[in-house]
Image (cartoon, rainbow, N blue to C red; front, side, top):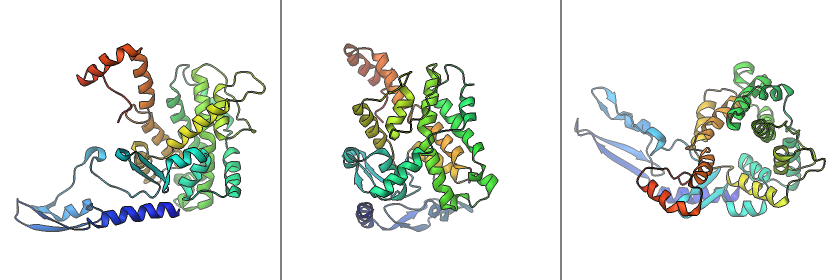
Length: 327
């Protein structure tokens, strides 16, 4: 938490030097306006002071190309310098020394857990890896070739019908202000997400789902549910488990990306958290967001072999092909 505050203070000090006012002259009327500048930005509502024939000026920014709508205390990214920090802690440190659930605790609550807190946190999350049998039945009715992400989005949305006590439309507007109830949904979502993802994958490959293992950690259990066939003592290779753990850590938080913006927009209507998460997952499904990972694999399959790379690069330059996964 102290590291995050230091980072935030540093950024604020850097931006404070650019605080002041901005003078805007409307050439249509000849009037000048003073707009306050804070953190090197102006509030869009300030532009409405500039009026012509009684109508205020509005900003137009499709795609959030030059718009700030929140200040993150959760992560800091500087892509040009290769910096990614969670709560002020460099991602390299977390990737080397932490587990995904430990990092999840850090992101949600603002500081790394103590040993006792971590044990309690892991226990609560892992107790929620099992999903209602009706969700499992529902998953069986997807087409045999249904994309796993399409299945995941649908089952996430369906979860909202299983937890009416967490739905503001049914339980009242105070749901999100109830800390105990809010934390319960955190445990549920973190716990059930790997199970739903594994069930979706297994359906796609035509195999029955594996029940969550009760003697494994978060990431190893996910691999177990994905890969176990009929072995009685199946365990994933520790190097594969650690590699996926690091991948989970690296993808845990990336500031205000497309899916984060989507869930903030949805939650602002006070819809339940499961419907909001489903909407965020739907945004993640797109090939211009999380789906880019799949698009990269399809691109590599299309290239085929090393000898084809120069021609592929030329096709990209001539706009005959797209280079996926590079922003």
